[in-house]
Amino acid sequence: MPTSLHDLTFDELRAVLVADGLRPAHGATLWNALQYRAETDLGLRTDFVPPLRRWLELRLGTDYVLDRPEIATHTLSGDDLTQKYLLRLSDGQEIETVIMGYPGRYTACISTQAGCAMGCVFCATGQMGFVRHLRPGEIVAQVHHARRVLKERGERLRNLVLMGMGEPLHNYDHVMKALGILSDTRGANIGPSKISISTVGVVPGILRMAEENSPYNLAVSLHGSTQEERAALIPANQRWPLVELIAACRTYGEKTGRRIFFAWTLIAGVNDSPEHAARVAALLKGLDAHVNLIPLNETAGYAGRESVETAADVFQGIVQAAGIPCTIRQRRGIDVAAGCGQLKADRKRAGSRQLEKA
Ligand code: SAH
Ligand code: SF4
Image 1 (cartoon, rainbow, N blue to C red):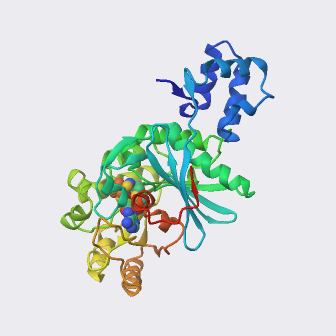
Image 2: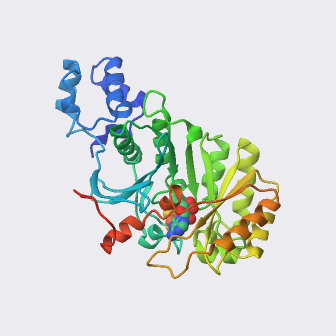
Image 3: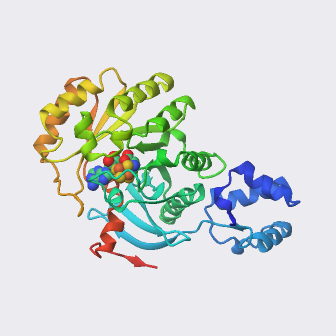
């Protein structure tokens, strides 16, 4: 199996070239082209010094490859503020990458796995099942795709959220390596404080982030306020029960001193009553928490419906009254991406507005 150059950190890339007799500076040149400039066709770089060009001719395509996903589809949201890309990986797997936001404030929402093993009933990705983990280079390449798209418009990517397909903490090592590469100031240079990892509640992963004093933001998808209620929506709650999850969040908060963002997808008649809101407030008491309420994106595989606006307002009021900041997300930006997995599901039903086909 050839190694992807996008899988490598700055030091690793340099070591590869040095081992083949090149100078360390050539490693920096190649890193700059791949990770800073997000170039995909190194053959165009006729300005590379002859030893580097020879190395690429000899080794690229045989021992080493690049991660250059193809665009399978490109979809614009109704409000034109969100662009969803379905990207095809080298083995044909398709994953979602979303660019959302406003001039000066763009965020990419990226995938960490093809499919997902966690099986949340309301989630289009969960309904698909697990296919495989993404390599670091496949995670990194999604960000470079977004950076290239924005660069063409004279814009820069500022923020990154791991809220696409897959459970990031189920693919911990590859995800953390990718984020190390992406936050490297010599590359994409996305500051760790601009990066958010969203998890369904993989307790060992949260504890590891606490232990390592991980510099990224943590978002926990809660959606249920009792063991039974949460398990009905999120099968993974059987493996990592709600009490253990909250205990892990407390450990994380104490060790890192960082605020945790809790996502709550509002489903009409399922988890959107004032009693639910009161239980959420009680559950999170004493934690430095922020609750994000997200309207359900209805999916073909789940009968649940989006809450009415008044229910969301009442819910928000109760959580806020308990002293916990609480925001209702609109159905755009991050919230359209919260329905990640839907583009792929939609495509199967050929229901989406497609702009491009590879
Ligand atoms: N696996 C991680 C990250 C990807 S899912 C996690 O579960 O946190 C990102 C967010 O989208 C999660 O909060 C998830 O609960 C939410 N989500 C998934 N499907 C959704 C849907 N149909 N409507 C609204 N939110 C959804
Ligand atoms: Fe996986 Fe997150 Fe979807 Fe649950 S909500 S199935 S953890 S991607």
